[in-house]
Figure 1 (tube, helix red, strand yellow):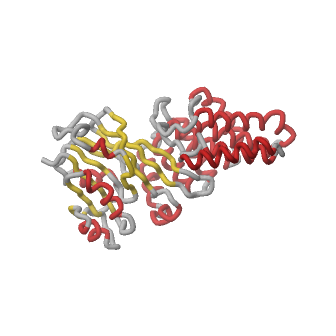
Figure 2: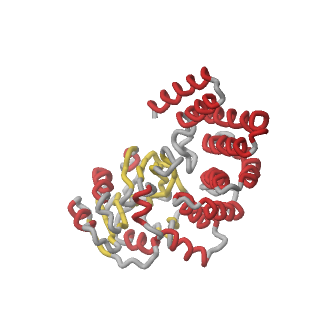
Figure 3: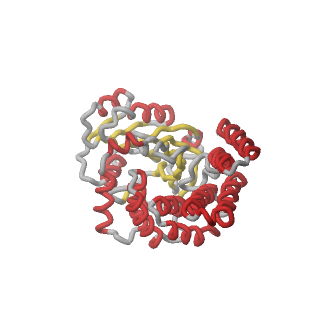
Length: 352
């Protein structure tokens, strides 16, 4: 029996399939690619990289495709990758010391750094996702499907890169995800995770009012211990501000501030929010709003980077906060602290 197999579902991924397979090939015993209808040569490219390629008729259901791919594997463990992902670091956890040939009773959660290139989306947003699965695990959900069958998750040091959220790749996917999310919500209108994912779709596609509405619904429904709550709160603050719902954003910030004392992402978003308040009410800027902006971004630097938080954006606990403070002091005509924070931002950027 195979110890570790790479298992993928793909469609029209000629531009990236080789990168994904080459990153995994030295660390797995088999590579299985299930193609759901490519017309760009993906199948041949995958086979050329040493993958076993099979076909599957797409039925608008990601879980069905994932489960069909897992059914092709006899491995004790399955590493699940998408074609727009690749292994960057942490492969030591893929060895038999962690993933026993006898299998296991946990799902391995790995760190995925999502490259962002939308306006205001500098850096990479971190997501922790279960991608190392013991034999017998299957997926549920037409879209943003989740593995089920084992309750325990263990964070492992494997780190993936991902460029599926870049503008070009989002355009290539079209409205597929949004359509499937709407279909899922018809059957599960009280599912906060689906509302969260739909909100993100609207946000990255530049639809602030739609995003704000969906984030609000997700917040109404989400349990306090949801693993994605941090990302939900931070992104909702930005969406509400961008949609012009400043009062709602302030109310959310007040309700959540005690929950995220060690989140640079929360404090970064809080600084942005109070800067918007200052622009809307300039007569109160110096007395009420700008001191909060200053202290919020300084708090980011005190905390530092926190990649263990789901949805964390690299730089908010370091060079991005320092850069914002430099511009803040520059705008106020305070040249000495402005120069100091410009230098700090450059230094911190070099270290990342």
